[in-house]
Length: 168
Image (cartoon, rainbow, N blue to C red; front, side):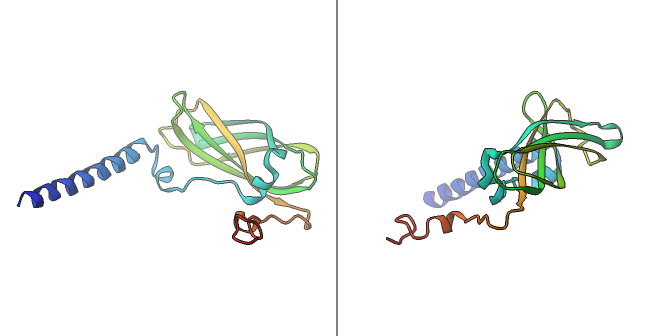
């Protein structure tokens, strides 16, 4: 009988712990969109280019009145290939580092190798009514390569034919 009671208490503690973690995640999310959205990851093309494709500078101004967003980016392509149709993703943080909003911009243009170019946007976007704008962080998360000769292998394909891939 005591083992059954201890087992039930243990199960209740596990459920209480899981519920506590869930409540903390819900309370810390600024809005439902942030809570349900999976984390943003860089595309294989952006990972392939590494630091050769970068934002030289950016400025994102989120205005709550009218939900107006003004964004300007200067992108530098130090690679040997032309980059096209890239996506820039930004998050908005307060001084404490709490994320309050996010947005992304798709640039439908080509940026030749070894060049930089400015891009500006002014539009209306959803901004959480709780947002307290202090700092923004932006990065390039997706890009197309205009050079058809460049082949990007997945991590699994890169290990094929090596000792790590199981072939000698």
